[in-house]
Image (cartoon, rainbow, N blue to C red; front, side, top):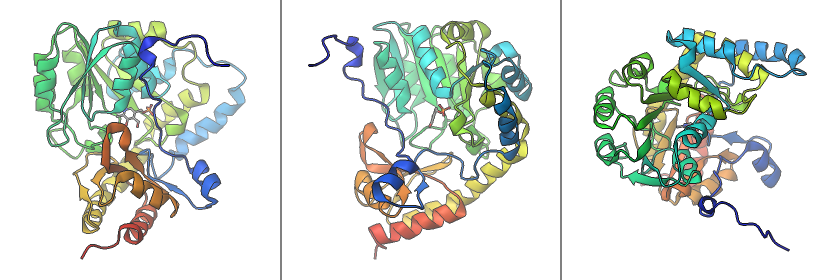
Length: 369
Ligand SMILES: Cc1ncc(COP(=O)(O)O)c(C=O)c1O
């Protein structure tokens, strides 16, 4: 017995996305109680308590469908950014919006430009549409926007830039982004995925994409998420900001009730809880530099980070380190799927979690003499 039906040709070389290993699976497999996950760049402070109070109130409404297009959340996002609600589309995580962008604009054999170590979902999703994906090498682990712009041509439908980037943690400046936007054909949609933008805020040259860049360029779409600084990864909510006509094409393929009702309501509240986001960013950015220094002392080569995670070159192969740390109840992210066998990505945790990480690392890799 076997499957007698061939899948779509473009599916044959697609590998499923590898999410960070879950806490529950490590608890099951290794019989550990206390497991810390530093693999998916979640918020160590948890969710905003105010957003969770709204989430709990919404449980009484769970027998009815949500409003399909998330109108209240779109209005709230529009108020937050001082833009109009028709410039906003809400998705089941920004991941869903990456998918919609590809489904709406990429035909078989169309070109999509990505960066070599850019967030891998861009490439995966474009390949699913049968695209020709062109990967532009990075310079010093940073997107080479100049070469990406030169690579774009009238056949290029989408050009993806994660800024800051996952997994390298680097960012591109406003000047670089503006030069890119001037250089690409107007028919190429430039997607600025800003999942980690809150953590890059301390750099004055980080772009102010909303509202400026989206207002100035109708071919720019900015993606934001509630999964990182807002601490709501489990609710699965992200949004796109861009030209209303462009977004209307995504809206045509949007799943009818793509964002669930408690999530829509909780995210409206989360946007208001600016103190929580400020605190989350402060906790992460205060821990970032000391953690970098400590990791360097342990023999890791660590790149500067504009995010809530660190991109590290390990003294032992990344997967080996991952496996050894699991035994200490710590989950980090090896980067084999990017072809980066010596590297790993480690989310910055709470003070206690970072201490646990460093103590485990001292045992696993030892202190270099
Ligand atoms: C750069 C980037 N974009 C998008 C996402 C997807 O986020 P979500 O679907 O949770 O909004 C992630 C998640 O890690 C990411 O790192």
